[in-house]
Image 1 (cartoon, one colour):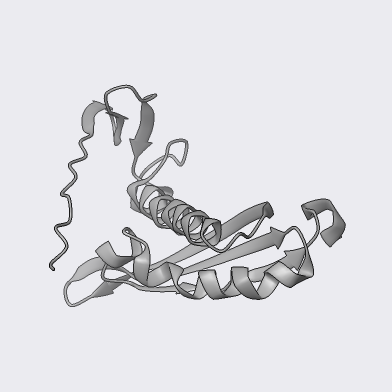
Image 2 (cartoon, rainbow, N blue to C red):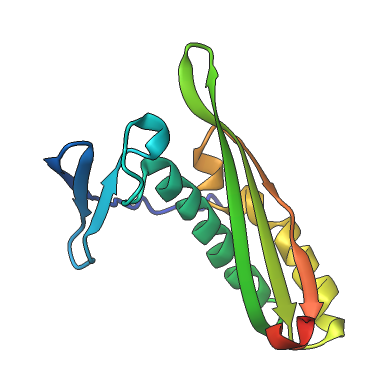
Length: 152
């Protein structure tokens, strides 16, 4: 039996607000000021598309991880994650060529660490955003037991 997958549609709107900036909006969401980063003549006071792309990938990794640990009975007590992207001029265009995500995951007890680690190994190929970019996406996770405060 073949599984029929749903198709989803998402929409945003961006309106120029002057200089190298705009306002991004979506129905029912707060507006986001967007514009060029300083590297491309922006003033650095608003979210750049490069940062939004990295943020989308980083958030998708978190949400995918949450889905995967839920099925394994893992209790997450803390999670924070940094992401770094490299934008290079390749084949005549600028594009993200590498994205490295560094989550720090804290679970309730040490017995859950292997289960959480196993779930994280399945995250990148299941993350919608990482599968939607050409860049090589790498997840380098750290795992802890207890609470984030007990990490030191």
